[in-house]
Image (tube, rainbow, N blue to C red):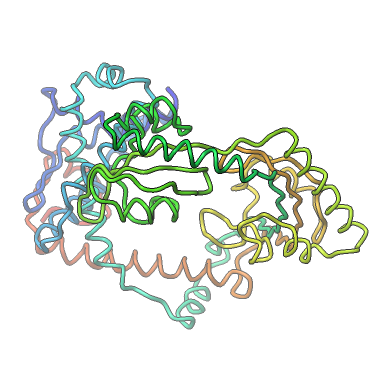
Amino acid sequence: MNKIYYFLLLTLTSFSLSAQSIDKIEAVLGDEIILTSEIESQYLQYLSQGNIKSNEIRCQIAEDLLFQKLLVNQAKLDSLVVSNDEVEDEVNKRLSYFETQLGSVQKVEDYFGKSKANIKLELGKVIKDQFMAQKMQTKLTSSLKVTPAEVKESYALLSDAEIPTMPTQVEVAQIVIKPEITDDQKDNIREKLNNFRDRVYKGEDFKMLATLYSDDPGSAIKGGELGFVNRGDLVPEFERAAFRLKEGEISKVVESQFGYHIVQLIERRGEQINVRHILIKTKVTATALHAAKLKMDNIAKEINEETITFDQAVSEYSDDENKSNGGLLLNPNTMSTSHTLEDMALALRLVIEKLKETEVSSPAVIQMQDENKAYRILRLNKRTEQHKANLVDDFAKIKEYSINAKKQETLEKWKSITIAKTYIKLSDELAKCELANKWSK
């Protein structure tokens, strides 16, 4: 079995187990219960990864579930709310993921032996519990902060074995030269999209046009539909246009990093919207790509001959969106300029590993987000070798460690207090487990 099946097993095995006669109540916490199937689904996932049978692991899984149910029970007592829209949106995302991985709705139904409607219903229960537990944890820990003094104190209390090892990190700047897209090409795309817009307003089906003509393969097969999204989920230009629309209305042509779009609002639910779009991507000609290569070769030559500095070249020539930031590459996971080599795309990593500090790479062709090609040169600004974390170089990381420790301490205190005042009953089997917390009275 591959990784997707591990994930599917973890998420949905309890659905099939719960229908079998082996299912029974293993624990009651307030108004919440834990079923045998909930423990077994995660235990089977553990075994499916090649691990040997272990009653200790089964007990650890049970204790994790006890904590989740304790959070859910308290969340309900505190009147925390997870909307049906939030749950439905997440259910649809996961089902769409399952369908993509397995190939079709029918294959998903066959694999789990349930109809799509039943899978959605039962998956919704799992997701709602997860969301309620997350909201309760957020309520308990979101306001926690640590001062610089607390960070230093936390670091001082760490043993040498507890101090995290920081991986090799690099800071990289780039110059990007994109092939020119002519005004005529852009005008032709705008004209084509405006024509589609007019045709829909005259009665044609937007979904059919998106299926036939959109350059977004993921949404084209769904008639251009993206599903419900929140603010911040979409690229800014697209999002601004989409959130301004009324239901059924179609936007004017929108330019984004992916190309040109027209957007239609299907439905609005509070701060969520469901939209469909038609995307037309710009197409780079071979002549334009060759011209970009010549321009980049000339820039690289000027830098190597020191007739211009790398920073000056970034400012004067680069088509990079971050040129105002000196062309620094941002880490998409942290939005900082620091990258670990392990997290870099392989092609980028292979170049960076060969560079010394301040050294500039040779020009190379890359693929942009709009799938067009461009040329790039890189400079390794800084390289920090693997080392034990210290307060000078790694204060932010140690601060993160400190606040996580504070959150864990807060949750443990809350757990102890809440267990004492909550009705809890464990099955005879579960009571045999050596649990870290005293769940039964």
